[in-house]
Image 1 (cartoon, rainbow, N blue to C red):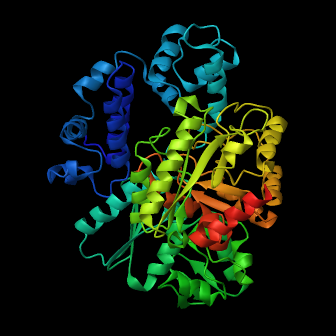
Image 2: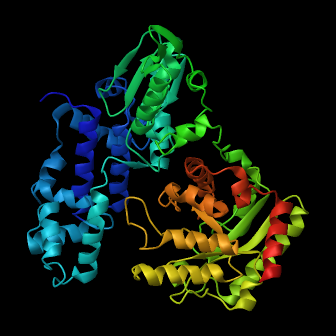
Image 3: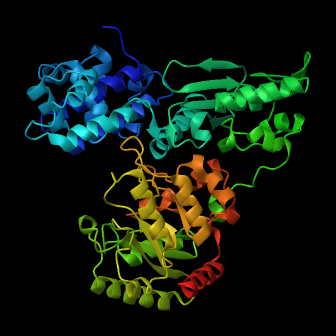
Length: 553
């Protein structure tokens, strides 16, 4: 059989993982296969060259065992174990893995009990009410299937930002190793634009001649120094931004194409993006803003904001410890935050109603506050632990502790963790009621969405933002890459209403503290300046802000 490309190898490895999981195989092994498949998707070199060099295990997520499987898949287009697994269920059943939250055992039961062999047959079974009566499936699963089919249709080749980052960083390294003659390699595509989900894996390299390569999922554009800026602009997109920019250029008597900005036959600007925007008399448009949402009009009027940067943030709020469902102690999380150069760490473990997440009892709150006081004394003013809580918003909009307990915290993140399916009016009123509580500092992950897993609650976001502005409650930009909530498309609306944001990692481990970067990316994409971010305040300013809020409560 003809040798296969990385994309085909990734597809076969995913099939291997999915079929294995339906046999009650080790779930960790299944996840390892899937991670390796993601890595293969973004390879910058032909697979044969990597295998010949014995370099498969240098790819993120691929160890010796998986390297052997990939090599066999490459050489034969299949694998003995895969062929055996294919005897269990038809290929169409694998389509069901696209449904977020649908476990392998449920997929197998849908096939065995109802003869479901494809997404179309699954949708038909759900709409015909055939899933609900089956023992082990039921009404909740049927509702989830109908709800999540829309997510499936949104695009199955997209990756979360943090996964795309790892793959693209590896791609840059491998391109540089393979082509030492390239003096520069930059990431482009929708990742450079800070999109919450990435499907366009693009690099622009500076070499001797202009070429393009799309032999793999990775799109590699090679250009020379003279045209690098034009190539980077074109490869970054978006399509809407480029179309509008070309129209703007034409109205000024220019022609803009992949080679650069021209007036007649004369090349006016192409070496850098800055030169191209400057020649058009436009304020430089940051990549995150290039979505065709009036950024060119604002750039022409010099009204684009100076976007928030990682280094503008002085502290972390909304983070969890072993007191609830985190993996590290308060001291370990605080110290890791301090070592990252921040001035303060705001702990916000789950509240008592969150039994599933080890929510804090009144005694545990007192213990955590004593620990925070002990550590703050040791820090001697050089760093500060802020005492916070992520308080559940209960069904009636009240917060998950009495007022006298809430007043013992420096800040309160109010979040919904239950009753996701309330009608829109009730859900909206519930959250607005919590915002109106004078002890609420931040409204956490406002819509509750999880990217490629579940949509947000049915909510009147406009009304909620108005309430946040009225009561001075910060809107969280939850930086966890599965959430990135509030959606950046609402950020300008929030700014126009007078809202302030809080960029929070929702970290449950030391490693997840670094999710802050993805929150910054979302804020930048939404056009948020540093002055619009709560934790861009220095410690003294934040403490004064929190004190003012407590005085008005």
